[in-house]
Image 1 (spheres, rainbow, N blue to C red):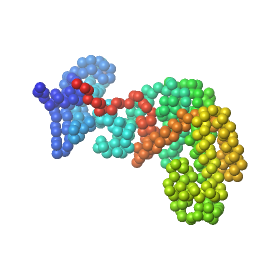
Image 2: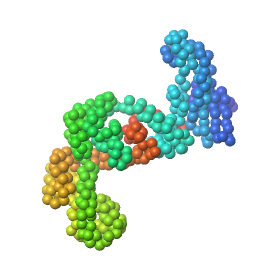
Image 3: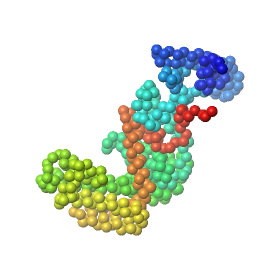
Length: 431
Ligand SMILES: [Zn+2]
């Protein structure tokens, strides 16, 4: 079979009449291949009003970056016709079958770029594709918006509301997950009650029903509680393990820090060392599970457990709360979980450790929601997994970490959007 190289590339690029490859120019020194694509039609339908057989008014020169051809950077070029229409009187440029209007990339190149950005930091994807980061961010936003517009949220019943920050402790973003479908539904700047109302508006715009949302899993922020009360009044709130344990760790850290500041002598005597490393080992050892202790941490924790320090009591309280949660999941019994929790609360209240007395009050004030969260392992595990993915999304936006970029990449990676372009490298069909 002998076929001209132009005809070969015409079919490899998937072009059909009136489009065809007119010329192929391979420059091995410059490592690039250029395809001149031609539109052979003298008459075309008007792209604006579809009136057939209209005259070509003029042609405009355009170029598109395409998937590499072997090791060569591939470019398409065409003089794209503009049709002057007798039907509507307008002069309109015809669309090309290989690219979106206005894009300097072919659709396949964009699909590849998007696939890479799901796996790699955007800056790395851009380097691999040898293009700038900025056009990739624009594409991510474009395709995510398009795919989200078609997203169906009618099956949403259980949501998790959480906050994350772009930079440590500032610039907050509220994220809402579907805890059944395990995907990100919504993200926006801020963490006030309005964010929940905005989510519910978005839910409705995507075919979701606020009255069908039966269950919300969240932290103890008053703002989210207010938002849920206003916009999701039928939903029962539960507070998940992750956030409750986080509060216990914060209370424990506060006890340790205060004691070290006010009674450094007692601390160094108990630990038998003034070494900064030992104190650091203590801090991390107290936060971690014993199975993860390093040798330094193990030593520090040994002395802590044999001391009468307040930090030791704080640590025992934290560990006991973990036990209460582990037992609740094991037995999956609401009444038992509540009575275990009440026993712990009574211990915390009598502990003479101010941060734990305060925590006991917070948990008591939210008791029903805390107990609901104790036996709901589904959301507990998921909230932690999602946090990991959010951290990855933040790393993916390194160097371009605006709220808009972060939200776009989070949707791309975590929303399980079904209307995104497919990866261009499909497996070759079997003969
Ligand atoms: Zn027309």
